[in-house]
Length: 447
Image (cartoon, rainbow, N blue to C red; front, side, top):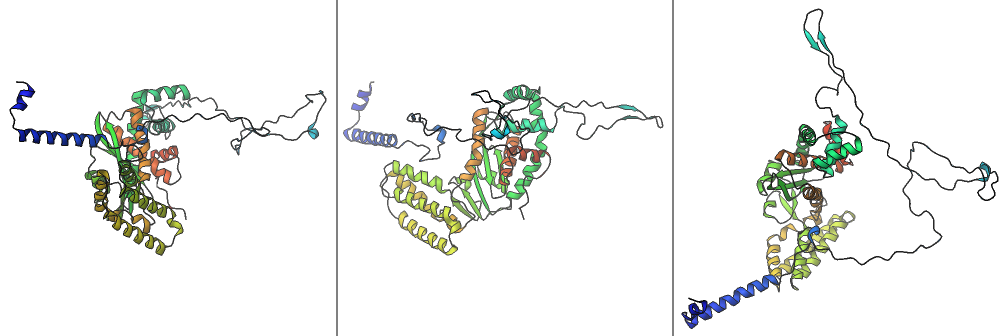
């Protein structure tokens, strides 16, 4: 039986109902197709996923003025050597010229990297038999030169730094160590170096976790990770004195509870993801996320709710940026005015589906938007957490993730050490050195 014959068996009313339902389905599909495309401007989509338009070619600027050396880097304060280059004869007539006829024209540096070769210490360890008691003994080698791995602390620091901070894979790192430093090291040895260093890194992470559990304001975010071919999540928890990374197979609240333990911070800074709720006495929503949501509703055609909401959020961000120069009473008045304007705004109906959806969402979180106005220690956005996660995203894209869970845990630990060290002015390599040496990366406050 053909489709036409099947339809002829239905009554007129049944055919009308069928056509109306079909038209509604078509209208729903067209409505979805007509929605604006999500980009980094109107959603949490990564900027790297947006299509890049061609920029206009820049015209080459012609030489202007009288020429010269232009901008140059600062001279090294302590050069290894100084070379003087006075003239002995005039280049025009060949006559003799002395120091009295010359003045210094230019000072500049020439920088070279000296040849790099490994520094190898050969150790001869002795053994023998005591002439008094007859017991055999082994001589004790000097500290730091015990038997075991032939690679010392400096090699370990370089391997960990290059792999975790610069996302250099085992294979390329093995080639780099040989080509640049003259150190022959296999991929398996690199893995062993990381595994041995995990004990010191875990000890530093324990100190960072203890510091985090005393913080009053904590920001949190998460991003995807790949571990042994499985979907994992890399979390970051940041406060004013510590940054903690954690790779876990879950994106749920249990990860946050495991990290915080019994600690409940005064303010939790995050986006509107469900797993980010209920962890602090109060919550400050990231206004940057809400601004992108408002922009999406504007792109979808909303003119009643989203545009004034965007203006309101921009006003709040501006006040938060200027709050250090404002009095407490002034900030309180700004907060009251923002709350009044928001209360009036959420009662205004939107004129698009996206705008109405956003309005209902804002009504549910209206008390979590402007805590940053009167609390100077609370950021208006969660951009700090996103910046902490950006190197992890780059590492994932370059290396395609981790082959084992211990590797992911080690990487998160090193990132915790490095990001915490940066809060105290430590470079990544300096923070790694302190962590491997058992020294704290959380430095005492300056007196």
